[in-house]
Amino acid sequence: MELLFLCIGLVLLILGGEFALRGALGLARNLGVSPAIIGLTVLGFGTSTPELVVTVRAALTGSVDIAVGNAVGSNIANTFLILGIGALICPLVCDPKAVYRDTGFMVAASVLLCVLGYFGVIERWEGVAMVMALLIFICWSYFHDIRTHDAAADLHTDMADEKQDSPTKPLSIAIHLFAGICGLVYGASLLVDSAVTLAEAAGVPQSIIGLTLVAFGTSLPELGATAIAAWRRHTDVAVANVVGSNIFNILGVLGVGAIFHPLEIAPEISGIDQWIVLASAIILVPILITGWRINRMEGVVLLLLYIGYISSVIMRV
Image 1 (cartoon, rainbow, N blue to C red):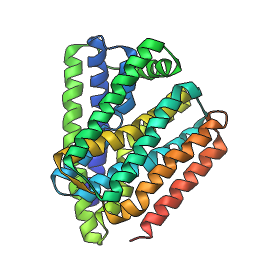
Image 2: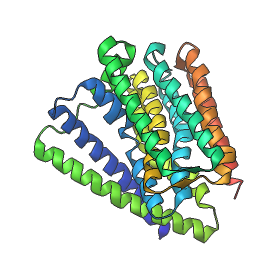
Image 3: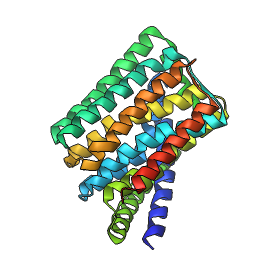
């Protein structure tokens, strides 16, 4: 029964995230927000809303290992699984000038995660600092984009153009936002409560559930967005979506979660998984440098790395 509730929670999270994303897009466009800032924020980070809601819910209920494992495992899934699948659909080609800045910031955020993991806890003030760093990055990127109109600015605009089917009428926008928020909140509640019960019944550490089952489920919106972008041959958008999500997962998801409740980082996560997050971020850089593309063979390698990682996590049980 708990497994059924967990699946229902995942479905509600995915649907709630999609409705909330469409509602936010419609609201931003109605308010006259520029396509560049929409692409950088609403679409760049919007697919990580399920991770955010689940992590906050887990932190508030004391399931800290699920909260941290969800964010860490999602980043690993994003880089290895989602980019791997995207590359199999269509080789992921992007302009190096469009992604080098965000990719560099992703690596820096991953280094920060390892530093915090060394001390074993993310305190509330550190969570505030992480969120502030994210906001500074967004503001700096936006003003840089509108000043230079470079490849990165064009990419953020392309991300906004990727979803043209958002609601336009105020009532429809309100319905999308209300339904999305309800789905996210109730779905997160079902998912976290079911994951905790399953972990206790099976004698599995909550961190393992967070790194695998919960992280995979909350990463499904990124998988859908990346697969659609790759299918449409908008491969630069596919890469930017993953990079933006990885940045948000560390600074936004863990930062906000720590504000609600200090996040203790389990020894196995600080000893193994956070370093895999850093390695996955660093591995992505030379792959992109090879002609700034992820070809199908490299996509297969990424998928094999994810399978190997999940196998190693399961073996810890």
